Amino acid sequence: MTGLRRSGTGRRMALLLTAILPFFAVIGLGVLAARRGWVPSSAAAPLNGFVFKVAMPALLIRALWAMDVRAALEPRYLGGWLAASLILYAGAALLMRAGFGAGDGPGRSAVRAQGSSIGNIGFLGIPLGLGVMGEAAAGPLAMSLLVDLMVVIPVSIAWLEGARPGPDARVSRRRALAARALGRSIKNPFFLSILVGAGLSASGLAIPEPVDRLLTFLGAAAPPTALFSLGLYLAANAGVARLAEASSVTLLKLAAHPALVWAIMGPGLGLSGPPLAAAVLIASLPVASNVFVIAAEYGVGAKLAADAVTLSTALSLATISALAIWVLPTL
Image (tube, rainbow, N blue to C red; front, side):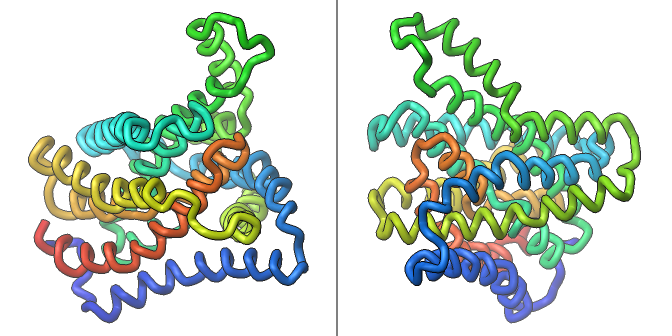
């Protein structure tokens, strides 16, 4: 297959280790800092608030503004990725509710669904995709990120907002919850940053250098702070509370997502070669750390999200290696 670098098993393993090891190192530092008393585990909440309301919005605005949103549109790829993501999102929510119940509230289904369908494109996908496939992965990475940021994550935020208890528990659920979810979602900094970044990209305005430096500086703090916060949280909540639930999210993300993407975009839509290989590689990424950030911010399913992020990232060392070595060259 053209586009996939014939770099050999050793080089691909080195790329994967280079991408994944810093991820675990920062989580480990968070656990160590909490257990040694350097940073209290209670600091996880304010740190997560900083990521959710300041650093991550800066990162998203910068990423979308720098992207030519209109040029990064290939209808078959966008449609296939969107269809696979939404089918898996809905399927995961239904299957896991049937298997594990409502858990700690209706918003838990949103965390399960988001964890099953959103991969760590920003932290792992971009360096890994470009390292394994070169520039052939750039377009698919941009389009997948665009769909995740502008559709799947806002759906989760709207769901979590709607699941929040309102001021009057006796109010009729349908119209009241829909209106409240819409109003809160529009005011949500994560959602607002996506709209702002996409709007600035579509406007064609260049990023002024001082603004670019500010957004880059703030945005660079998002991934390590989120992972450090996750480590603090894990130190205070040791062990996997519900291994079967976290394992199910991991299985759906690492196995069902790439299989569904292949089925829809390959046999279904006729994509082949580098675009299809890139899509399958991106779909095989582990659960995104922003799933934990969002779950912790809303106080629903944070432990599940933390366990799924950690477990799926550990297992992805084997699953992505197998995919890159034996499967992708055949597409």
